[in-house]
Amino acid sequence: MNHSSLIALVFVGASLATGCSATVDGQGQGSPDPTSKSSQSLTLAQCATQRDTCLANNPLFGLFTCPLQYTQCAATASNGLPDQVNSAITSASECTSAAASCTKAATTPAQVASCATTEAECVASIVQVNLPTVVTGTATCVDNSVKCINAAEAVADLTKCANNLESCAVTQVQSVVPPQVGQVIGSVSSCETSLNSCIAAATTATALTACGQTGATCVAGTLGVTLPSVPATAAVNCAETAAKCTLGATTVAGVTACANALTSCVAEVAAPVLTCQQKWTACLAQNPFNFLGCGAQLATCK
Image 1: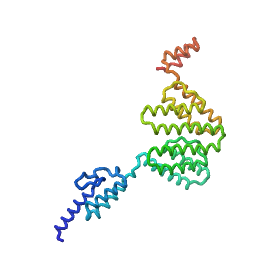
Image 2: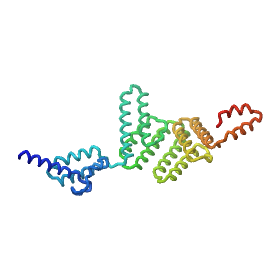
Image 3: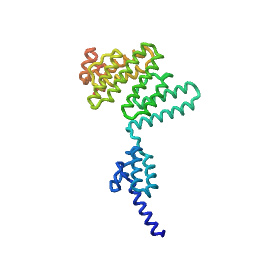
Image 4: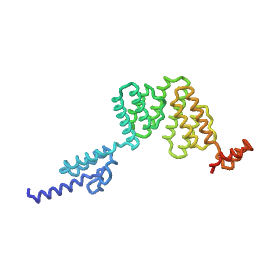
């Protein structure tokens, strides 16, 4: 074969290689080039279909170019899972890897326990769960949650992972706290898991707002607090803070403090906003002769 023939053959091979850019649906070489579409939008199965079509269209040079194309496609292809699930799986791996390094470097039982707590909080943050106090048995809950996340195929699966993790962690902490405290923690946790499921099922902004209000009422009712008529967002924020507080409580006094904090929170947001004149009138109403004191108190009022 002379030099010019070799060049011609290489040119033909390059032209045929272009035919390896077959569409996923198996159309012929005359169809649009699918490589213009990012391979990140393809699954591994679609990459394989692309390779097979490439080989069918180019039985000679495709033996060299099509496998290469597949390798490049597979390197960046998705696994067909939603981005949120992929992100959760990646984050869970990072949590467990960091925990393994932490535990390996630990030299005391306290350090090992700290590593376990950090891992639990890391995994819980992935599925947006408020964990109760981390105890020895929580480690099993975390391990099961990581397995659950890795097996997830849809965002709804992550919600199940979240609820299972919180319920498991609550069961563990209930075994070490006073029964009455454990009961309140369990009830607040039920409010939380119901809220998670409600949010996952919500399809409108109105539905999401209703979920938040229902969750806030549930938490408040568990703590024996009556929610006044306050803006929905304010009530939800107060209840969320109270829920976290309660889940972290280990004593009756701790639960009581959470309830009192919720009462103060909603009372503060429910308080009417007064103008400077109204504040002046209210101040003098308490002491009609306290002109100087009220003036000093409201000196910076705008």
